[in-house]
Image (tube, rainbow, N blue to C red; front, side, top):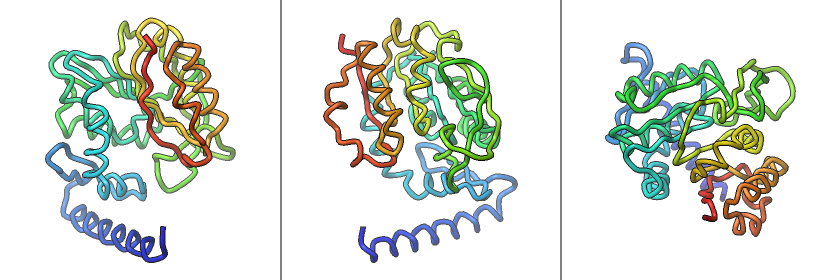
Length: 256
């Protein structure tokens, strides 16, 4: 990106934040902005992820829904691992009615409170169940590290202080059949998969998973695990992951 492009982005971000702050001062409690397809939270607590969702909601919604809409259907069960503020769950929840459900897992207590607010504000309690936990190969606990100003970058794979979180296994969620599994855990994707061997083997859900070169070891291990569970990974093995950087979302489907 050019110097001029970076300057324009900074100006856009500053103007967007100023507009949201002005609206928040008039609101009672957290601000929710209705964009037609859903209402997004802005608490103004310094979480840069909130601002990013507001600035990019139109393009992200359009891009993600073009991918996700064909993958879901009414009555389907979906698992959202690393739900953050609920953007993914908010997008697809209406497509699952009637009788569909989303189990949305978010380990951070502060972010989980916002996720719960998103669900309530958008009237999604009949579809989305929020769980204040992360996912791993074994149940237990870990430290979640906030490595940037954005809650979307929080990771277990860092050093230093952080927030103590609980961990569960995908296989312990008690789900008989899952149609779509989304995983966005900042390098911890392979550990999430290890805790879902029964789910992956029996349900063979389509995956919407973040992979990238920033957490290269975890990405390569995740691809190996998916290959073992008979997922189509040929295209993933051809990618130069150093070029992917901080990660991107990929759809991975079973071979059968």
